Amino acid sequence: MPNAIDQRLASRLAQQKIKLLAQSERAAVNVGRVYDALLRDLLALVGSDGVTDALARDAREAAERASVAARETLRQDLVASVQASRKATIATLLDTVPLRWFRAIAPELAVLPLPESLQERAVDDPQFGASYDFEPIAQRQLTREQAMALIRELAFPPLSPDAVEAYLDGGPGGISWDERLRYWDGQARDQMLSQLVDGVSAGESVVELRKRLEPITDGVRWKAQRVARTEARRVAERSQVDTYAEMGDMIEAMQIIATLDQWTRPEHAARHGKTYRRQADGGFVADDGEVLPDLPDQANCRCYASPILATPAEFLKDPALAADFENAQAEVIPDPAAYVQWFDRAPEKERALAVGVRRYRAVERKLSGTGQRPEWPDFIDQDGKLLSIQRLAGESAEHFAERKRIVTAMLEKREELYKEATRKGLVPA
Image 1 (cartoon, one colour):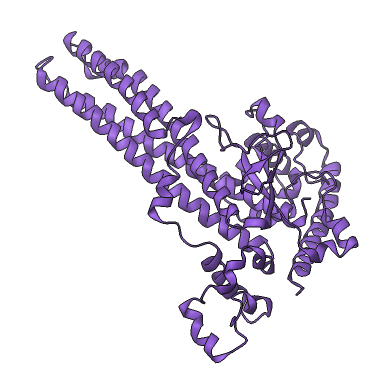
Image 2 (tube, rainbow, N blue to C red):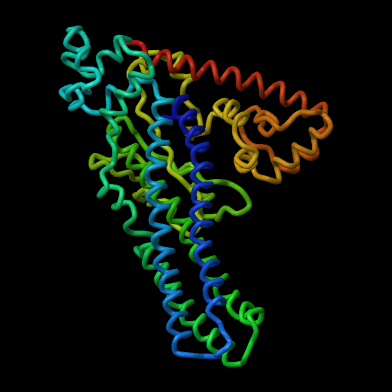
């Protein structure tokens, strides 16, 4: 059953997803620049001698170099997405989950040697992790930063180069990103060379040749950028889910979270909140037998999987806390209190992306002349759900202020609930 930690974790992951979406956009921009450069290179080849064998050869070589450059550029961005996703996921887990819970990840951690940086203290202090590496965490013998560093080293070791490369395999429909780029590049290359030769033969100017070639380079650039966005999100999601898997039995289930707006596919909106329970083999399967899909499973898909953690025994023994701690709808509803500080610190572009640009601008207009900028409570109701643009635009100043007062009180209550859950999670068994 989802709980306050799950809700906070879902919120942190939603914030992380915004940054990963921005990173996938950078990957798309980077690969797009390759095709912009190709158009310039092709036009630079045109001289006054008309069509020659050298022109055709040089044009083909320029197109082939661009194809290689596009694949290498995207490969580098995909590797960066894998590493950034894992790093952000580990940081999110360590920042959100009570540190004591990590004792349940794997029994073999009990016999692992201490890191060299801590071995000297272990010799001086017999109680320091002599029989169990996580014991200093349970006994509060480490600062939070030291405990997080120890957990990161024991539970989430760095990925090997081969492991990173493995994330780049596969793709939607079983066709790899490399194969997709090669396919679109091959088609575009033949069209570009044909149009270039025809234009030069007709004695066209550089401006006229640009008009011939731009639709082709624009088309292949758009397709390559779509591949870049989808693949950057896919490898980031795979890295994230595999990082959860390293937590073993601590993960009880996974839920699909869809980005719900006017661009969401109906079938993706329908699966929002669908739960996939962990199986004995480590896989995740829904009650209807469907296996957790490898997200994103369609071009430009923005769905992701959010974990549901196994509730420790401390909570099960406290009925009063368990009643508050669980979400009656059995859905991972992101904790809106987790957004407040992040929303205040985030760049405006990320804030607008979190709530939707049109919704963000509607609140900006409402606050015009007050000297205030939009805050998270401006956008949600007392259940933590985003209000529609129509509701925000039509709300009177009095209703806006009263709703914000109620929402702020709700956020403060949720923040206390999360703190209580964390405190309970740290109480020794």
